[in-house]
Length: 156
Image (tube, rainbow, N blue to C red; front, side, top):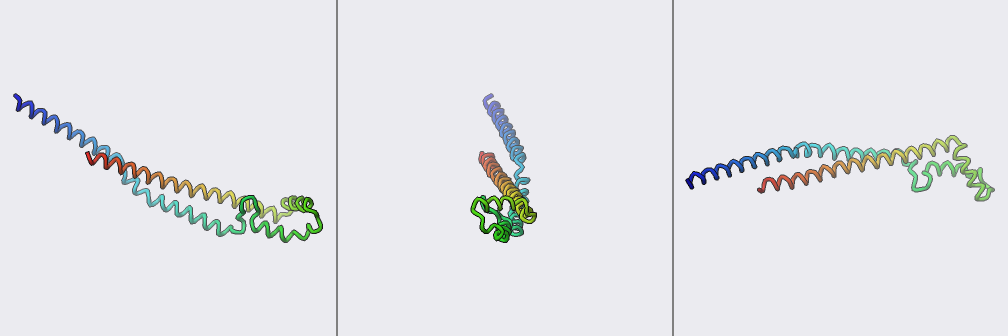
């Protein structure tokens, strides 16, 4: 009798081990690391493209890039051309004249609007780069987690 119970226990243990192995295999297949790894090059390319597009845009619009709280080089150039018209005025009158010219002069107004558009597009580019960077970072983090899960499941 003892030998029969030992054989039954051994069979049960083997069946349990087989069930556990099948469960681990199912979990490992469900991790879908292949799809994530295949998505890495596309995400890296998207980040590189966003950075190249931003650099190209900055290069094409370099005259319209404003520093913080200041006018861009193109606006400053136009104001310098118009500056002789403000000669002989005190600081307050000169400031009022510049403010008026910003809307009254069509070329200056168009340049200021372009400066605003460039600033807006630069912010969009920065956000696109940051989103691409975050997506890539998230996929890499998920892959690291899945790698740890695989190690855990295969060591047991």
